Amino acid sequence: MPEAAIGSTGDPSHPESLSTATDSDHLWLLAASVVAIVLANGPYLLGYLMPAEGFVYAGVAVAPGDNLSYLSAIRQGVQGRWLYHIPHTALEHRGVPAYTFYLALGHLARLLRVAPHVILHIARLLGGFFLLLT
Image (tube, rainbow, N blue to C red; front, side):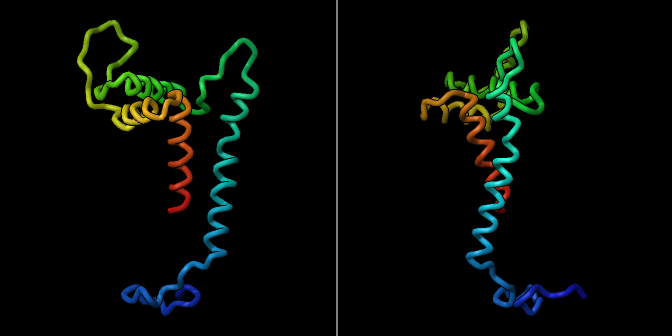
């Protein structure tokens, strides 16, 4: 039988017997999450501050093919679209319900009057932060 947590009887059928987090535990979790987010965003900050000579930093540090597609979907959302169109093809096609999260971010960016790359980074930061807190 596994050891019980400190301050608990170890019986999961009785939630009151489980230990609860203290304020200092919450503060530690918050501080550790902020540090992790800051460290994880170092490559993005370096890309903006020190782009390679003759290049413009696109705002993505990993998987540029995917992330630039997401930015494309956000731009389409800014234009008011709810169906995604592949922008880099000469073939005629109908929009499809793909990248809906990013299309919705585009609509939000239009309402907040922020650039597509800004709303993408805000969503990425908030998502990472809430993931760390759960």
